[in-house]
Image 1 (cartoon, rainbow, N blue to C red):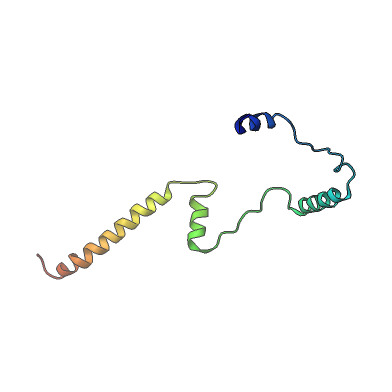
Image 2 (cartoon, helix red, strand yellow):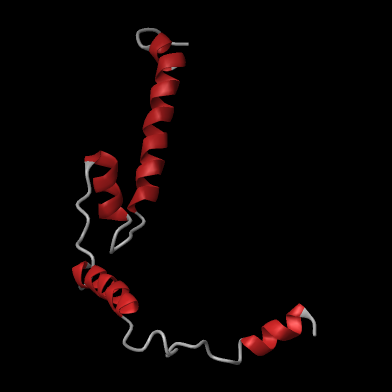
Length: 101
C-alpha cells in the first residue's frame, strides 16, 4: 500500500480522542486546565479603537478611515500646483518682476 493511499484512508478514521489513558488521567487534566486558564484570560469583544498619532496618522484616519473620500486627490493636485508655481517663480518669473522681457 502506498503512502498516499494510507494517508487517504487515515484521514477517514477519527483520532483516538477518548483513549483509555486519557479518560480520567490526571496528566491531561492539568494540561487542559492550563489551556482553559489561558483562554479565560484573553479579552472578549471587539478590539478597542486605535488612537492615531502624528500628522500622517491623523490624516489617514480622517480621509482613509471609516468614511474614505476623494479629498486626498484634490490635496495632491493642489500641492502639485503650488510646487509648480513656486518652481516657475524661482526659475523664471522673479527675473521679470521689475522689467519686461
